[in-house]
Image (cartoon, rainbow, N blue to C red):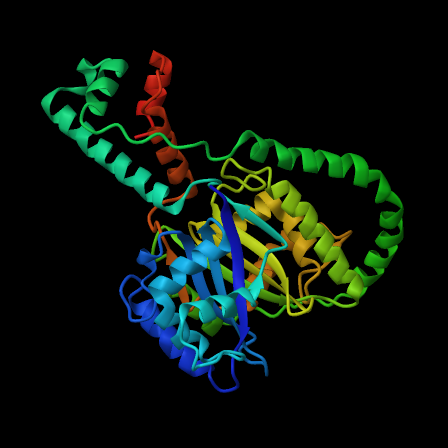
Length: 409
């Protein structure tokens, strides 16, 4: 199943920001049952969020993040059917929206005209539909309960692995077999693209790189890092919304450095990272195992970069993972943003300055006014294990494979 990652970005009318916040406060107070968007009825969505960027500027913007199954037209059909009234109440505060045209077709067209697709993105559990993730979770929980019931009647030591599996599977209807997460072509093509890029473009980039490096070094020497510590007030507004469930949400908006050389360099880095990310289909990006969906987008005519991430664990552990396992890639991206810690040769230093990098991240973080997860208590690794449990049920397993399967519970 194809998964789609995108945002809808709309300019907010002059003095309407506070009215929008009032709407989002109602949604945030009851994500599952509110008068605007009942997210649990939107079956295709994995994660969604609303944030307001550039709030203190003359042009505040509403960013609506969506990570969902299938094509955008099918998703918008479901979204506007479930939440057409709520979307109307939200977007009537935005520029270009006709408050008199309250119908699903108009709302869908309005949103489609404001789509921003990512320059680079990562999906932790590729090809798993949101509804299947929930089905797999329920199946595993049922099997775990049934396993406990079996052990209450007969001690675990009395079972062989095959006998235990047989008795356990006798307690449930055999679930429907699912298609592979990806076709062979979907698995192979990203690697082909990456190899071709290295073989064909690599030699062609030598001369441009030789020209670009002195320019980059000259600019890096004049960059001014933002060494302002994050204020207690800023930190507290994020902390009160974090660590409420297994996952967390991060939204960061940064200004891209001038001259245009920086924008072109950023787009190239994101292009290269996107090629690499398309080959990361086993739950990890650069060794980081906690990212469900993440993406980077160049927005506002190349003036800013947006980063949105849905991840497992705490904010601190997430950034520590980036610093420990992906500092160079991280630096290669954000070194093109104003105020980022000092860098060398695009990818050196930067995020390695842990305290300054974390302060920079907090200082450019945008509050998540509304954030929804379709499976609030599952990690990336949980989802993968649940998939393995279900997919092995109809298979003929060896004794060793059976033992490994039982250890997944």
